[in-house]
Image (tube, rainbow, N blue to C red; front, side, top):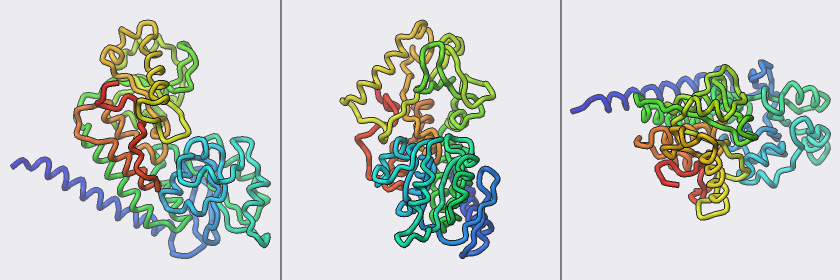
Length: 371
């Protein structure tokens, strides 16, 4: 009898159980009691105290909004930033929420008015923004200081390293500790499943290009300090960009010199991925792939020669979504592994309150299916 698989599974379950117990203990210590006030330290290092149960939430960032849905607190969402509508408008009820503007142009007076109850008294409201993103707490918090019972919390939920800790912080604020533990256990179980599937396999050289790139001399990619680089590494790929930066510009000749075995290009869309083919979406995606194939010298690049060029939905590379991104990247890098990224994606969508979305694709062409 081969004891290695059994041993691996047993160790994995033991580690998962240990993690859940530690998570529960961590939340209990942070919350310190079942009542209020409740205090957390946000990602800006600010000590934030919530004096009473939160009645209303204004998320300005799409990754933060998704965490609210994961915790089952979407009924408290009062209004949203435009980023939430444009990047996660597929979430139930998001497009019906009042928009309070976009980055650097938020309507703070509107937020203050919306926070009031019908009798004019202010409800306990939190505004959820980022620290290093487009809606920084350093800008938002001072602008809302004059409004009573509005608390600003800065959480960089888009960063891979912050996913579980920020969910825990938000769970404390919203009294959703049980939902935090449940979601964190699921997330870590799936990450462990992905890492086990790719362990010990040769890591292909990967180049990832942002959809915002303009011209072959002005291509945007991710450096080693980015969450995307960490995600590529988790899926057992080797990012050919080794610069200690988050983003940087490169030229197509630079890509040719590094000869990636896999090319990824991100696509931004305000829906849940793209329609399956035949569709207008598929036609546009194929056009994007063909542009890469037609670039000067592309026929010398390993990824092009082996038809390993993919368009990927950029939303799954950040925030809690990254568990879905890691699964698809693992299948792209290692198509032979026993892993079903579609199944993980569907499970995640159900956690967000979405019905099964079998008519949508998050990667084109689908890993393992010819374009």
